[in-house]
Image 1: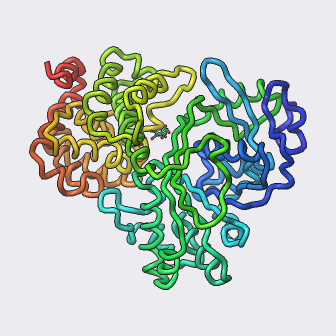
Image 2: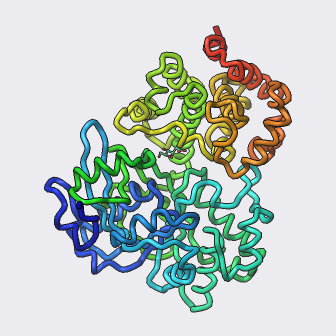
Length: 490
Ligand code: CS2
């Protein structure tokens, strides 16, 4: 039987696998990461591992808040996991920077004790857009959402990321410690500002003096994170076992490309991530907006159109004669012109490289994986770009097609139907789909009424509405030939 990866068995890993060369026993829990999913393991954990190769004791404890899956994978492995870089060939490496994995609902006090210890300096987060509890269009804390309402009623026994951060900061203040830096690594525009907003709005409601302390002393730098990380499959685990010579339930595969741009505004010490290639910049917001619009926007378009056309992987969409060209024109003609890249940045080689990354066949990145949580993803990825095009009176047929594809998908037109829609407002989407009753006009009205997605300005624009109506009609009738003609404005 193949042994499981752990601190004891790691020495038996196959030759060629890169192992931590530092002594993991010397690491301290100087960081806590909330949301230890695949992305964190293939991104921030690797940067920290690189830093540790040069010295220091910046260990991180990974916390899951919603399911115990990752904790069950990593706890028997002493927090260890391997990451494969897939770019034609595959290079495998074991990451040592994560020293433990905890499932918050099982050990809430341990999580809070770690976060409020004087020696914890940074709390990083990848909790997805919905983890911030903010209305995507107005930015207001969703005080009536079940989990947030319950945390507000019992702030000392939190369950949400915002609740944990607030309670840990409260304990630190009470103990006379400085706050930790809270570092959002999610795909939100101005993610640091959003996290700060969420924490401040929350603490203002349950402990106003704490809110003032956080406003004065806390730090919430913004970051831009980038690495494509497909969900791990059972096949991946088998391949990893063969390569590693050990069983690794926490394995993740990713691409060679990786990028991390961070605003250097910490309120205490931090790891020297720049030594691992992270860039500290005062232009993070431009990096973030550029990435959200040029990578994540097309990604969401690929996801919905791919799901509707029954193309399972991102590279399948890129290889589809119509959609491959659609993505290229979408990026070049409708998104790039309204992106203001960081100073001196070469936007055209960036967009070219992005398409090469989307075409990577060894990644096996599922369109259905990207399709989830569309209600949270649409505003920063597609709708803000449309608003800029509208203001500049520029055409945006391909962006409109992407929005129409989401509406078609979220109203159950895809092969998966309505049951597979994974979205925090799935109930509202279902109601909108029912109101639409299969009629394009009614369906569009019902969706545009979703204020948390579309806000109030866009739905008032007749140009916006008309631009979505035609592709929506064609998608609902699966008339791809006419859709192609329409998007290409022939
Ligand atoms: C993707 C992102 O699933 C999604 O929504 O668009 O996870 C994307 O792969 C990353 O942001 C790449 O950095």
